[in-house]
Image 1: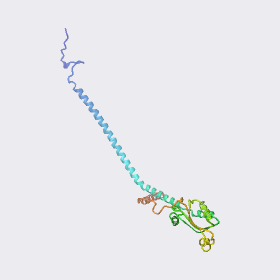
Image 2: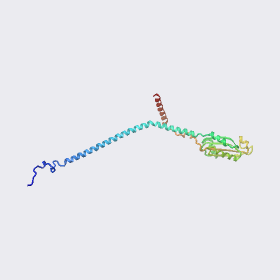
Image 3: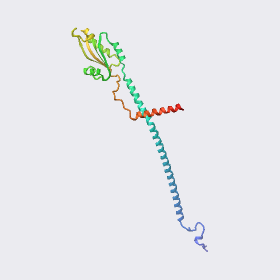
Image 4: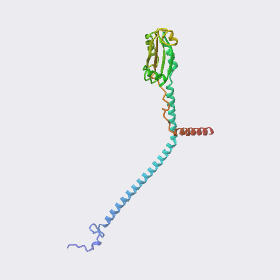
Length: 250
């Protein structure tokens, strides 16, 4: 005979026993797992956002501290700039000093024996001597110091030798002859003073230019320091003085 299972399906046990509630619990369990994963991801995202906000706040505090320190040190920066400008000005003035003593000493050494000087004058850049030489056409456009002289020599060759000798002076870049003329006898001598006693001499007027020599800057050309620079210098010097007093007091 064929066996027959008389136990109701809902009371059966084993692998072939049918589900009482169906697949609904599995769907619920899957939904809970998905929800748990979402909550975990949200928590991680919130933690990351909080960490970023804390880092941003820290950076803002550090930026504010750096800005405050830079503002405190700005006076020292301006004082340093003012100091460098003053040092540069003093150095340029020192470099622009022209050694006229050396030039006159070398002139006395190269002066030929047959040359006599009646007039000798020196001028700096843009002086009257430079203007006169420019008008005469001898040493036009003198940009540095110049030495103007006039006198007489024993002939035109003597004047040429004197011009060549002047070029041996250290710093002379060019020599311009403004005029040269020979005497016509005792009545119409070659000039006045010592040259008048030498009617056969040639009177000359020339300019020796020192174009390569450094010249001082014109007045008002120096850079003007910012208005806050003197105040910054006073503030910096005041703070330094206070620091030294505290050191002495300690």
